[in-house]
Image 1 (spheres, rainbow, N blue to C red):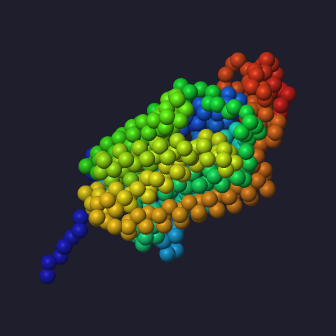
Image 2 (cartoon, rainbow, N blue to C red):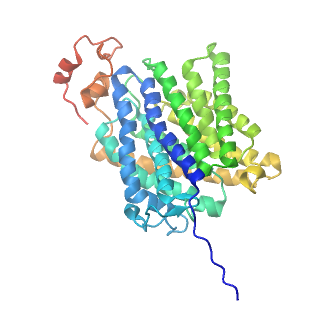
Length: 440
């Protein structure tokens, strides 16, 4: 009888080097998002917007290391719904532990950066009007109750979407884009619209900052998508190229709509279109061909450019278009896997246009509806609970004066703070801070 000895998992240095770089790229996306969002708000709430993203890095990191990683990637304990607590506090995951061909600690850190930016994305829906203290409570609770379960369903061992349903999601259309968009919609409804919504002009105060933020997001997105191959290989290269292509056609699609509808192609439209294309290719970059990526990005750029206007007709104040870009774009990209998936990328599953029939499209649809409904309902419940206990909405005085001054006792610019009617306040920030007591 011959005894076969199985080789222990070994770290591949090339894969590890690429994933180290990809992890840094994805972490950079959250400061990029802070600039993107910060430029889109009015001058009186710039710092508050930046803080909501930056504090998410700290809060989500603590939650992820304490329990989040174990609940997502631990062995399934509840029929595909949640992982175990075997690695509570990262227990048992030393420097010699290996996940695939990379150190487990690196894999856990890479996945952490996804959780961080997902929480930060939600903040854009409630810009200008949320209590900072309430946000500090919301982020860790939301991460554990919303992001963690959906991530386990999609990527975790035994997760029902991955193993039982068979829906595909390469880099986060379900746990990142649809979850953040549906959650943003729920919080919009909990907090209500900003003062002056649909009456006052609420234009971005700094479009160069928006463009810089979008550029950093695009740069980081290569780590987000190509890094999800978890190796320096051909799949990573294909995901990288698909990401670039979809961002380009998303940008062009949005500008085409703007030019035709409004007669002007804007910088905000270019930034938003690129992000819409990148959102849509996130779930599908490892499933579709280059042609499919071009179509996915174009579809997102065109549809999302119209979707951002739905809030005015349906009367929900999604301040920075988290619903119109991330929810709608995530749905487009996730569903189009069922149309454009090719066997050479997926290793088996094929979309409708490549002989796969309606089966994969149906599986993608079930996943979209389940994740969107779950994220919306649970987030709405969390938001309502915080609102009734701590209060989630800033006071009218805080919102009128600006959250930068009333919450953080700072202003972003030296030339004063805008007043409630769009004119500058001539008093210095210091004298104003003495009059307005900072509150969380």
